[in-house]
Length: 358
Image (cartoon, one colour):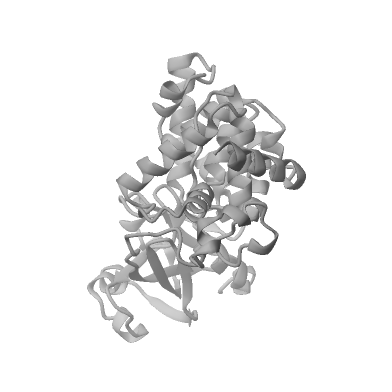
């Protein structure tokens, strides 16, 4: 086992990427990087890391910000619960720890949105505490090298891999060992087409010897995808239109989108216009559908969103009841609000927003 760790660390020192969060021991910045990089590629997350560290210089600044400010800065990164948890945890650090980031695993793990992986990462990278960091890259590396067939998405699998990683950590420097394991899994022992022929672990790798590289690691659960059909009502008068903030317990809580009708299946525009929801808004109001967009498809981890935008010319003053829940904006002021990437893409592509409807 010592030889395994030595080889991985040796490879890391020669091949590691120069990443800003590796050049600091500031737990605040390390925490930001870990949360941003969950379910996110490094090249995508880099801009957000700089955006947050430059806008909110420390945990006090983050805690003092409004949720809307944070969601706007997070816009486009997805998994918005991460941003809300980040905000809640920053307030907790200020209130419970006087603004000093907790320096032990249990206190770190007690913060909102921080699980075993993130707590171990912060404890290891910021405070050099001996906690193995086990992410998807480490699961894959250990599964292939040691021939572990226990599903990585099972509770028994997570326990088995974490215990093995902690044994391998041994007397190695925790921060170096953990970064090396994660980097090796990310760049060398990749999910698809790993570079086995140039791998320093090849001669003792179970998966390479048994030709099981494409089989390991094992997952027991197949993600069930839910299809959803959104019909957005872009109610316009010249350059003005309505948006609303999503309050319901669903995707994109706290973000803004257009008033919307959801159907269980894909239906035609005529059928949308005959729904009860459509008639509630437009039965007594003079309105005209001037454009219907092509379908926009947005892929989430467990959901596929199929969205169509109906651009409707109308007098916004008539929507007195709806205005209690909707906000009147224009193509400039809408930029102040955090919106899902789907809405952002629509606003970018629909050049007619620059040409008011008369």
